[in-house]
Structures are given as C-alpha cells and as structure tokens.
Length: 267
Image (cartoon, rainbow, N blue to C red; front, side, top):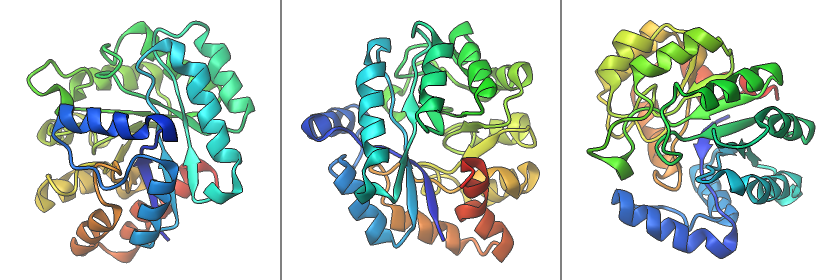
C-alpha cells in the first residue's frame, strides 16, 4: 500500500489558468492538469492507493468557496482514492469556529502556506491555528523552507522559526512539508530532526542526496516520515521509485509509504 500525503487539485474551471500561473512563477513542470480527474489518473499511473489533497487559501475570504470544493471532493464516491483537507488563512476571522466547522464536517486537517499567505510561521495567527487544531484534533500541514516561486525572498517558515512554534504549541499532528524545510535540509538535520513533528517528502526526493535523506531519517525516526510528492509538481511514480531505490528495511519503508499516514489520518 502507498499513500501520497501531499498533492494539489483545483476546481475544473480555474485549474488550467492556476496551473499555468504557478508554472510560470516557479518554472515548474506539472504532470497533471490540476483537476481531481487529473490526480486520479496520476494515482492510477503510479499504482498507489490514496492521496491527500491540500488546498491553500491565498486570501481569508476564500474559506467558504474552498471548503465547499473540499466537501464536494470528499462526498463524491468516485473520488474515494482522494482525501481532501481544508485550508485556513492566519487572517481569517473566528479561526476556532472555522476549524470546528471543518472538524464537524469530517475534514481531517488543514493546509497553511506562509509564503503564499505572506506571513511568518511564528505570527499569532498561525499559533492560533495550531492551538485550535490541537483542540479539535486536526492535522496541520505547512509548507516549510524555500518555495521555488519565491526564490531570493526571505523564507517565511525556516527551521529555527518553526522550532519556536513547535515548542510553544506542542501539537502532535503538525506536518512540515518538504522534509522539514525545502532546500534547508542541513539545518533541518541540526535543528528539527528528533522533534515531535512530522516531515513529508513532497518535492524532495529528486533534490536531496540519499545520504542527507537517511541522516535526517535516522535522527528523526521512521515513525514521523510521510511519503509525499507535491503532485502535480512531481510525478508520483517517479518518487515511489526513488524512495524504493534507497534500500530501506521493509518496516521503515512501509511506515513511510503508508503506515504512518494511516495512523495520522486515523483510517
């Protein structure tokens, strides 16, 4: 079994222009059209079992429309291989009420993205999101480290700053995307590895060295690593093959590919 813990989809009517804009900004190479149907095809091409879709609110006013889209995905039996999280913005009003609404509607977590939300991870808004998520037992996934769409700009979620938040909130269901901090993996090894936080492997395996990947894995422990790709920005099958090429022991590989995700998602 394999679960991809970090993917993205968009409503059909805006998927293509959104993908085009993101491609131009980050010089990315999408492998799907950004739709739910496109992700389902990528899942089938890779021969995996399930994917988690992570929406991002770039404005607090998008909460209602994104939540409607997410609930529609999760309610459609044709999308049984996709679990969509909700999105939240640090400038949203009544964060507690919004996260309770998501919880009451069966949504298992939320995605935040400090770069696209133009805020640092240690601001009060994000701390409040994490505290409320802890209260309602919701997973929080954050982009961490460098975003290729913001190269040259100040990193909004660097390892040292996120450590402050981890130590303040102590939320057991906090996930740092891109293996703790995209393109900042030496700092992740020294600052974050071993902390009580999850790392996903989204948009990482094709860039990180096998040695650095394993150094972080062995220091952090294999109970808190989640296989993820960032599809459509990575082809799922390619990242599955890279991880399998590392020659990890069977139990560790199974934890990363699906066992840790099953436990975190309470499936």
